[in-house]
Amino acid sequence: MSRKIFQMSVMGWDVNYCLEQMIFSPLLVEAGRNILLQWQKYFPAETNYTKKEFGVPSLIVRLDCVFSEEANLQVFEVEERPAGIGICVKINPCFAERLAVLRERWPVFTVLVSEDRRGSDDYLWTQVSIGPQKPSGNLFLIRAEPEQIEFHELLPFSVSSLLQKGNKAYGERMGWWKKVFDGQELPWDISFVLKPVQGSKARGLEIWDLAQNRPGSSTRSRILRTLAEYGSMYLQPLIDPLEDENGWKILRIFYGYDPLGGWICLGGLWNSRPNLRIHGAKDALFGPVVL
Image (cartoon, rainbow, N blue to C red):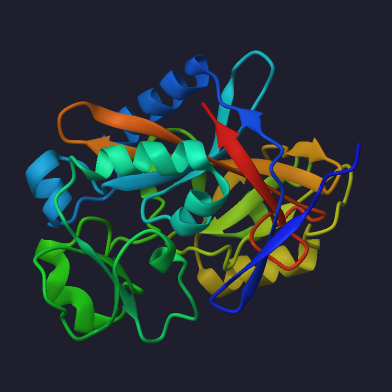
């Protein structure tokens, strides 16, 4: 049965989606929560509002993951300042309802978006201001890069990461990946991923797909060049995405922090693409993941 595909425009970006649901079971919800209880200990600390008040790095996070039939949750990484919340609100009514309930327990904040940022879907779910000038209000979710020092004075009022955005040191302590410095350390006899020590949006991501050489995989020479450019990177064994009629897919599952009850699963989206670099490209497709 073919999918019925819809499209919406978000800041000039055409998003393809369908209403075909995936279920995130109670066992998977609990597995994700347990991962976050470990992650919050190991994500590099910064003196933002949520760390000081609640002991967590961010009010909302996202697990990029897959799972097996045995309810085994495998996580590519934890996005501690995730994009895609607005798109998820529009595509997934279950997510929108659970987020609305949780927001009643959150302190009020504004999303502050850097003028240099190409786009944001946050206007689909909350109030947005364009920075770096400080808008009225007390707290902010700041969408800016760590090197944008003009935002640093707002760190005490931030409800998510700022200086440590995209820092992946937590995964080394959790046993998910290890740091490598030289091509001689790379295990060419298995499939693996190299990712920057700190970064986001798939920048610098290289995939060694040993057996299949699927679209989006990297050549040996490219991997070596990228590692030499960065000097050090994290090496993670390749976690295979799920197969999909649009290629391959992963899940993007959001959790919000309830000051009274800890991490609450909100549901999320599945994201497929005919490429191992699964993100929001023109050939990507999204659909709802419900609880």
